[in-house]
Length: 299
Image 1 (cartoon, rainbow, N blue to C red):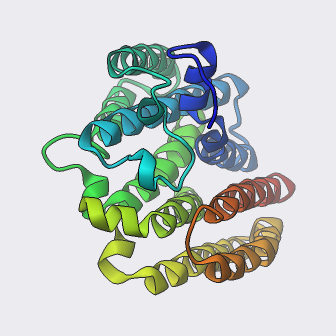
Image 2: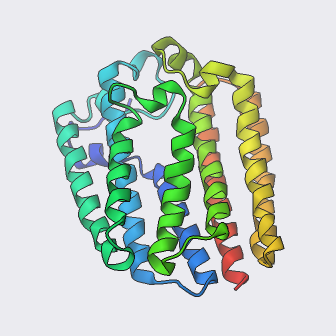
């Protein structure tokens, strides 16, 4: 049991879940690298995108923490994943509500500066990011409780950050952006799949109908494997465009991905699956690095 003073700085850091920020930063780096490939890279909007994406990830973590606690989905007695702040009493619900508001306001203030680079239509994208950060866990029809989490990952960890980062620099959208967005969304979804695979029993009991609850743990394992395989195959399309490195380098991601899949199947259930969570996060960073490096070397 971790000893954390209520509403302390340490409590907020733990609630922010810094290890999840790789899922926010990797798409921006991929989008920026693609902009570099197309001779459109700009440092300032890239940094702004990183800040906005990171803050929105923290806000989403706070929102999930609070509303899963209020719904009773997070319980100390059967919690397998990393400890949650509200459930553990590290942060009070009222303080968490204020924290959510503060982080979102700061994120929107920083993100609004991108209007200078990409125009007023970016306001709509920002509003959608905030709406779906809440809609994922709360509201009359929480999307993650009805099996739509994977689609949201593809959209908000693929198309929005990769395409948005590219757009504010190149003021364009093309097939390269679409393919890179799909690759990024698929690999980051492996992180959600591991979470849902681990939490299968708790989600079933609480009525959270993830895809794995709907179709079973064997389906979840194959989904995890398939996401990485499909992402790697899609990366090969960049070879056809003449971006040899962007097509070949991501194939090395398959080695740790398949190995992690085999370990996940062997562990099958329990807290030891948190080891797979960590390895999956590392694999995502590797794929992001390989694809980004591939774009840079293909220029």
